[in-house]
Length: 256
Ligand SMILES: Nc1ncnc2c1ncn2[C@@H]1O[C@H](COP(=O)(O)OP(=O)(O)OP(=O)(O)O)[C@@H](O)[C@H]1O
Ligand SMILES: [Mg+2]
Image (cartoon, rainbow, N blue to C red):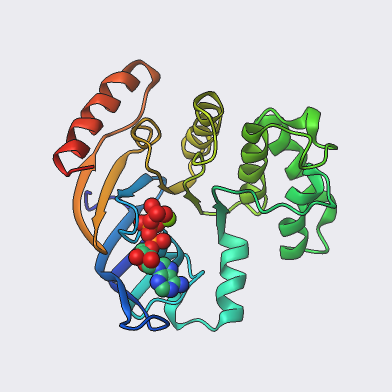
């Protein structure tokens, strides 16, 4: 990272302990992280290393036990639950392994929902934005379909549209391809690469080196600590194979 880089999201000495278990589970043990504006950051590590917890803690979905999280310099940990949920709605987008769409709404209305919640009086603008997103991610032809009438790859691209509907500055994705076969996974990664190229900051958790190789930088967690970082530089299709091999070799050395 250079001096000129603008930091969008930052955590300092971030800790998270779950007290619901006996003994308490210490999941994050002091994570300092800076995400550059427009960066595609990938979070990797063994199952249980704290990747999802890190994502939830830096996005304000879950309250950390200690430390601070700064989004554009604003401390999210000092906000009330209501303020934090407004910040999430208007500046962050989320994509999970499962889509969490409502069964009784079609694809387009599911995508529209958060945009209407964020700005109920700007319905026409929201519809125009959502229709443009549906076109951009190649699913306009299934917008009237129910959520069980599309493929897994289409559903995840719809999740990406929903995450972008309020024009967030950061998109968080937790194993967005975890439930997909390799061709659908590539479709979704193409969509996320497109999001990143358009300037949105992306923070993605994945177990898949092929997906991780799309990122600008990979961080590796072990037992709730950030133990290593790999700068990959900008992804290009020509170099996809080499990047993947390189990343895989790096991961293997960590016992991945
Ligand atoms: N609500 C909770 N209460 C108690 N312990 C929890 C809770 N949520 C997570 N944990 C524990 O925290 C640790 C880290 O969980 P987390 O979900 O962040 O891991 P992960 O790296 O995302 O794993 P995976 O790759 O399997 O998704 C695990 O040991 C898990 O059991
Ligand atoms: Mg997880």
